[in-house]
Image 1 (cartoon, each protein chain N blue to C red):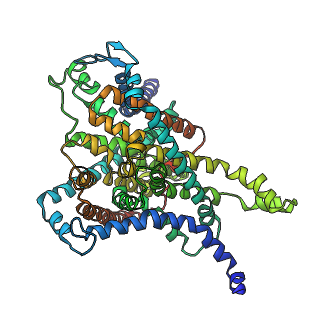
Image 2: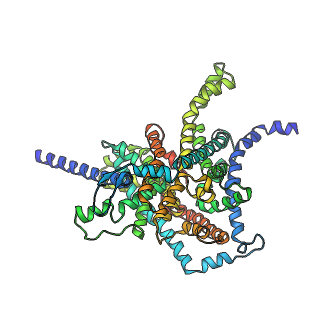
Image 3: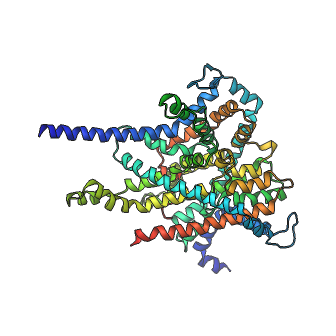
Length: 278
Length: 285
């Protein structure tokens, strides 16, 4: 009996060991590429069969900042992302409210229509956007690139916000009005604090979407509106792997921040777009 | 007039609130899509006249069928492998082993970081001087020469899975977590083995989640652009081919590119509809 129990225990441990091996392999498979970028960006003379770079240096970062003009590129990226987030949020608040809380015939159909840009490959409408923007002289302007980003960001924001507004409890609002609060007071003291986390997560997600957006930027950018992803792409073409790695390390910072935020409060389903119904 | 407004006040208000969403949809998606469609029927370099020459010349080429085949192959291979990875992974994560939070966060890494950075890291990791080849040649001595993975079809599939499995994994995990443990307990009490519980209870119940996630993975992989652009080498799926029409040729071949884009969008829509139909049937019965 005792040996049997020991045997079962060992089997259980073996199972656990197997599970951890699998999880660890998975973890390494996902993360080691970033470790290699990090090492590449601080290493010098890393050739041949060496596991680690023989010398450490910060030269590639200096290069990235001076040669590829990071301060301006970063400014472009942030300005464009800021405008895109602003426009998307302004679009998504009323539309999300209507879709989340009001009686609308054919709500499902409207929602699917609005989400259609996420179902069609972006390159297909990016071609059209580029042609329209050429005519309107919006190519190579911050506002132009930002508006192009809205095509992708707005459906996202509407999705997140409509589910936030939908989750708002009617009874809490009623209670406020029963207690004598007028509409304005209810809005500022009850509604706004309740939906703020949703609006924040929508802002975070649209910001990263715009910050990382590549396809639509590539079709609408110009010399004055080079963003970080485009700059990284150009650097890959130029073939300086070390400088490109340094650029990538800078490009990755907001993503890490978003990961941190997600881990703290936001549900990951929202990140993939919450296509529960598809 | 005034009474009309009064009577339909609620509906008009709703419409007004939906207006910004519609404006962005029509202005930034529908109209550009229309421009793309119209342009695809224009003779090269002209703004008037109609022709279907771009479709016939693109679809007539043997290379076009290869490109479409490659795009579908990559998307389907990526979807299948993502499911095969996600199911065991999420089943393990559900048991809440120590450190499961870290692994949960790991799932989200590929979709949070910019695709370009991921692609660069993968190229470094799988390169002939990357750690994988160092491990194979020096650590384990499995092979003498570095294995070529970058710019091969196998490599591209690996990169696709790395980038797009998250959609399947996250959706599967959230479905799995929402599953009522009572079902499994009932089956276990009734004498089912763990394998039987998994095969007959858990998998059918989470199937809708797996399906929804795999659709997302498929869509992302089918429309993938930045990944194959820098890691594809000579393998160019549709999105990259479209871009090459504009980037490589001077003057840019907008008409040909538009025709290819229309074909791509249609293929994706048709395949998605088909996919939902086929995969929904077993769960419905």
